[in-house]
Each structure stands twice: as structure tokens, then as C-alpha cells.
Length: 264
Image (cartoon, rainbow, N blue to C red):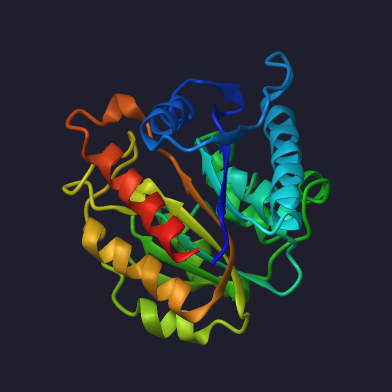
């Protein structure tokens, strides 16, 4: 067992305490655990520059937690925090288990939304923003990634995902255990996007979608990952309090984080 070191990245599109960044602050208040909060960057800088600089600062804190023998647990607004977390623990020999309703696998050439965060996994695996990614982390091989609970996709996103070497598990998590067993790395980064949950179980953000797992199944999936791998670090992302009218997403986020802490 390693003591969890909570590291907070309360930003959305590189801006502090708005949207899903505000969700980080809300959860920190509920958790009651001390946290290392990554400081803000110049809000006047371009979005990608802001975001990557925050990831570089996150990587430093994750690296320090590892050096101190702690388990890095990142609470972040956006999924692109993966770059800093992986940069901190080191990509060499690392697999990724990524729970998300969305693939986050767009590239600048095919993306139509203009949302940098939907390129988080493609950037981490080396097919987007290579020069920027290289300032934070080495890439992770697509074949060493399980993308689970994914279902809310545009046709071009589905085609790109299906043409990749990712191990893809559908929204209900049917076949998750087999996909985990197929990973060739003993060490993984665990990425928990809160909107992996079925929208009927909790509305984590404005991108919540039907067809995902219940909270009980999501917690079982976390257990399955820890049972099979050395989890080098974990992150929970994408909680927007404005979408959480009944508080169920907040409660789910706290349950997921406590389960990770218990298994670390």
C-alpha cells in the first residue's frame, strides 16, 4: 500500500475554476484531504500553450510524489491532464486503462469541435500535437491502451477508433476483463472520466451519455484494474457541478476516488 498524494488541476481549457475546473474545487472541499494544487498560468496565453504548461507543472508534482514513495492521485478538470500524469510517472513500459464515454482520439486534421480536450488520448499516443506532447512526456503505444465505456462518437471518430490498435470496450463494459488480460504491460495509468457513467446513473457534465455502466459496475472495473496491474497513478476528470442537479455525480466521484485510495 502507498499513501495517496492528491494533486489538483482545477482548470478547464487552461483557465482556473470554470466549467469542469470548478468541479475540482467542489470535490476538494468534499474530500477533506490535503492536496497539492498546481498553480495557474498566464490566462492571456493561447489555449494550447496554457494547457501544456499546466501539464508540465503537473508532471513535476507527480514525479515528486513518486520519488517520495506516494501514489499520485490526480483530480483534474480535463482529460489532457493525462500528459502531465504520464510524464510524471514515465511512459516507458506503461499501459493505459482509460474509462470515458468519448474516445478523445481526434486529431487536428479531423476534429470539427475545436475542443482541444477531445485530442487527449491521440496526443498521449503520439498521433496528434507531437511537438507539444514531447515537452511533457514520451508517447504510449496505442496497443498498450484499453479504451473502455466508449460510446458517444461521431462517425469519423468511430472510424478512426476502429482503425487503431486500441483495445476498445463498449459502454456497458462487456469484455473489459478480457481486454485487460490482453495488455502486455504490468504497469498502467488509470484514467477515470466521470462521464463514463451512464447518464441515468449520474450527469457528470454536459457531455453525459446513455449506455454506460452503473456506479457499481464502474467500481468493480476499478477493482479489476488494481487486481491485474501495478497502477502507477490514477486520475479522475471531467466533473462539472453545473450539470449535476441532483448531486449524484459528485457522490459517484467521491466513491470512485475513495475506492482508488483504498486499493492504492
